[in-house]
Length: 264
Image (cartoon, rainbow, N blue to C red; front, side):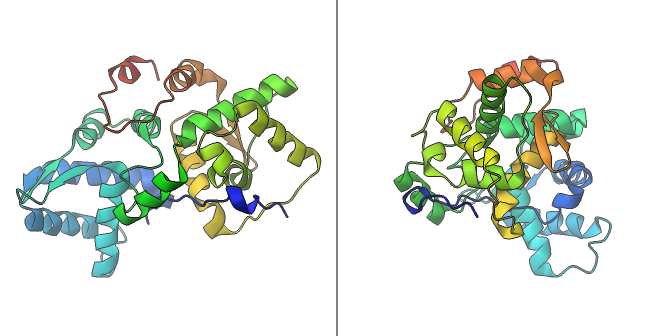
């Protein structure tokens, strides 16, 4: 069983939506409801959004705690609304407006993944300090694409990556998440482990975070999935090139006008 050397091990994580198995239907529904609410004081907005979440099919009997979790997960991970507690005002975000207008989840997830990074606002504030102290500066989608492209350079063929491999080789290894190691060395380690047929920990709680990002990359058409392996979608090469040419982390999310202009 593969184990990351202890001095390089640091487990990263993010908020996980409880509706992940139905995420495509849920996101458009919630974006539409948030745009309908539009704005209000913080308590009224929460009440109205909770009422909308409870109207989603299958949610009627959910506990108040679960409904609240849906709302906070949507806010933390997808940024569908902006809450200003100082002014007691909550507003619908441009991201939610764009999804309602375009009804395009592929485009939505491309933009979401382009900006998704560690550390980021999806992490609880008291946890962010740990990432900073460890030196984590990690854009997972970019690194997954870099690795798969490097593997093809080294082998001459398309190589897939599993959720367990992504977890243990990329997400939880500080050599990768801090940029300490170049992509060639990461790819060599990946191949060496594959040749040796090394086993990985596939426990659901362990692989879920890397698994989320890989699944989102499939929705965004950046990857294709076959038999538990994830491969580059060569039909999206223009978009993939754009990702790889823009690897820098953002302290403030800018308007992604160039990304919108690509044919995706």
